[in-house]
Image (cartoon, rainbow, N blue to C red; front, top):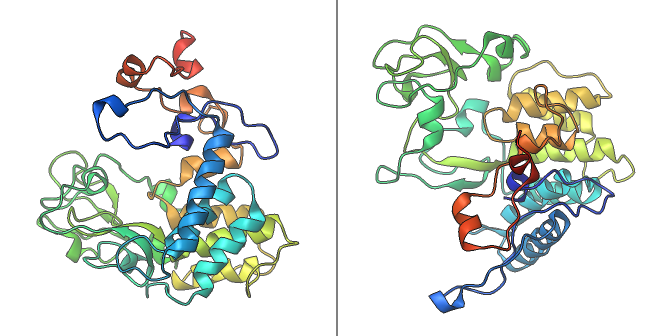
Length: 326
C-alpha cells in the first residue's frame, strides 16, 4: 500500500513523503475508531520490516498453504530490494533458496494454473471451484469461458526472448473451445469472444479457479543475483549473479549468459521471468527509470487517497498531484 499511495522510497534519504496511516490498536466497536494521519514512507518501511522480521522468527519454516517463516523472508527480500538494502535482500532471498524447501518447476509454464501449490510456490492464494472469480484471468485470458482478453501482448515484446526460450513461445494454432489445458506454450492466440479474439495472450492466468502464485522461487534467485551484483562485497550464497541468472534461463531453455552478467541483463531477466505478475512498475521506480514519458517519481504514478477515506478522516492529506489542478 505504501508503494501504491506514497512516492517512491529513496535510499539514503529522509523519506518524509506521506505513506499510509499506521494503526496499532484493533477496532472492535464503533467507539474504538480513531483517526490517524498518514505516516511517512520511512515509518511505513520500518514498520513493515519490524513486523516481517517478527513473523520470520515466530512462524515455522513449513506451514502448509499458510504463511510461513520462509514467506516472511521472501517478502523481506522484496522490501529490502525496493529500499536499496542489497545486503539484507541477498540474505533473506538466500535463506529461502538454501532452505531446500522449494525447487523450480520443470518448465516455466508449470508454475501457473495449478490446483495445488507447485514446488516453486513460496506463497499462493488458494483457489477452487467455489472461489470468487480471479480478475487476473478476467483481464489476461482469452479462452472458452474464461477471460475478456483486456490485455493484449505485442509481438515486439515476444521478440525480446531468446528464440529457444520457453517463456516466449507462441501457440498460434488455438481453436474455438480451447481451455487452459489445451495451451502448451506461454503465449497463445486468443479464442475468447469478448475483446481479444485473435490477439496474443499470456497463459500465466488462464483459469478462474486455479491457485494464484504470489511469491515464486524464481524471484528469489533474481533478487539474490541483483543484490549480490549491486553490492558485491556481500557475496551471499553459493552462486555468482551469473550462475543465478543462468539457472533461471536454463529452466527456460534460453541461452546461458557468459560471465560476468551485466546489470542490464539482470534487469531484463526480471522483466522476462516476472512479466504480468505485478513487479514492473515498482522495479522501474527503484531503478529510477522513466515510465513512458513520466519520471519515476511523478505524482500521477501513485494513487489518490480515496474520497470516502478523506471524508471520514480529516487528518488525511491528499497526494499533491491530485490537488494541483493538473
